[in-house]
Length: 99
Image (tube, rainbow, N blue to C red; front, side):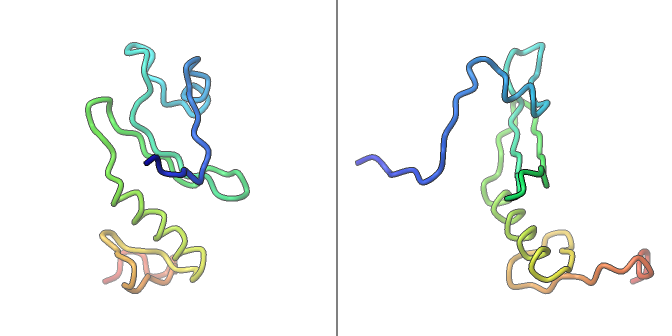
């Protein structure tokens, strides 16, 4: 039984999309492994590009989306290795470099 996909899928046979997002490896004639996150306003808020031989990590992409949503909701940043349910950090330039 086929799953019912709830989002649009696209094909990029002419390489127009990967050229516009600047992820085309011209010498290989193929797109780099890229993940582009676009907010509802149509603005790119994250772009991750991996070499051709390196796959993407779906768990990290999900964590990144959750961190972005957390930041939008709370106004806080998230530290390295942050996971949902953990506290964020106050974004204050005066505390840069302080422990």
